[in-house]
Length: 425
Image (cartoon, rainbow, N blue to C red; front, side, top):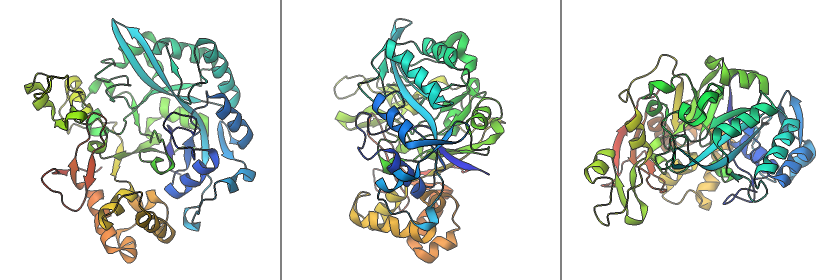
């Protein structure tokens, strides 16, 4: 039976992350969101690894659940319609900064591990080579290929997935410090890479423009730094809910990865080109017109994902490879409600309405993706109209750039917004 997985999040021990990102709260909010399987995150951090051992128990090969005695810690209201058995998979993100080819490389990688015993071995080896105690997401001065080689020597069942592959500053294809191909980064070990994470600023159609990447299955994850961000992107699998089955789907049985749940990529904070401090947002042609520099100050423009994809693409936008998966573009429910009621997504009004809706209808993913519009209409006619527009891709966009999130609206825009029609698959 299909299930929704978020394979890349963070814990309370990662820099700039919520202190509520502990296992009981993650478990509770995954139920509210409609996430069936979630990353443990940050398993290299000693204090968090200790909590993983204490609070999780293995329920299938390589997949864990929260022990019953820890559930009450969260103290979060979970409607009956949302309750589910959340499973955890051992996953972390590592930041690598190193020099290669006369260029400083800054690459983020997601690592999946088959069990806690293997994680313990990973941690021992990385502890010899860098500081894994300063942050939940450690920064290591290792070459990506060397790290992959080390991990495979520990266990062939460890899987490395390049994270948010187009982000300018910290990714495998990033305009600031990345490579032009997987092979350039991992060299002779590149065949061990089987999946690429789209990131918030790109979606599958953008990635389909590169034929060289057709062999990789696309996955999406939230990279959540707070509980409400869980599942802002996710991957839908149709496998048994255990590590060997998930690994096999990623490596060989790509047909069992049904697709991805995505941000509208314009909402990602590195979609367009620009300079945040100058309130300058540009499309690729404008950036080229200005010779990659601000027309105001001459400062180098931060090249966004849209531009970087176009530089490496060998297909036009709209091409769809034969093996391409489905995808569903969504707007977080709190953002939809914020637009409807006219106050911020973190306001008490929006939060109250959010919980009223999930109690009446079901989890957030069910409301956004699967609930019949007529059922939503019985609860809130305006919301039903908004969800209908979102599912059709009838949205207004103000793209993100240079670290500034974009804004997506469903009920008209102003002079700062442009209409964007996206075909949904």
